[in-house]
Length: 139
View 1 (cartoon, rainbow, N blue to C red):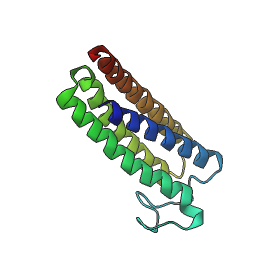
View 2 (spheres, rainbow, N blue to C red):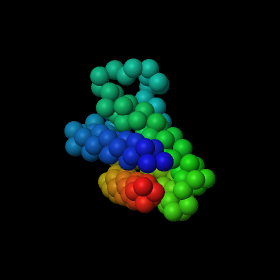
View 3 (tube, helix red, strand yellow):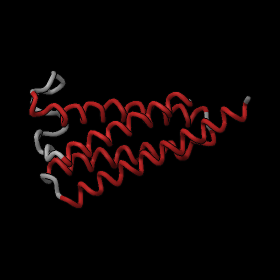
């Protein structure tokens, strides 16, 4: 569980870095279709690269966060409730990402998307710290 929560935490951080880079470099609408860019799962053209990578990483990270939550629900009682919350936050984050693209970067939606990402990071950091403490107590 410690490894899964650490991987989830790291991936969330990387997605946040890419999201901030995309916003700061004004590439947020480089790929106006959602959920995938016009190239689908293929290697993207240069103009879609960062947005495509952000979305592919988001898909992968979402799956890993969900697996982490399922594992915690079954095996780590102390992180059970927070793990369910992390899945709810992931779902909200995905919906906000879709709305950001469809609204053509409505500032309030972009801010909500970023804020929800920070909340997800904080939630996963707390889950990681819980599992770290439990592992330390077992020694």
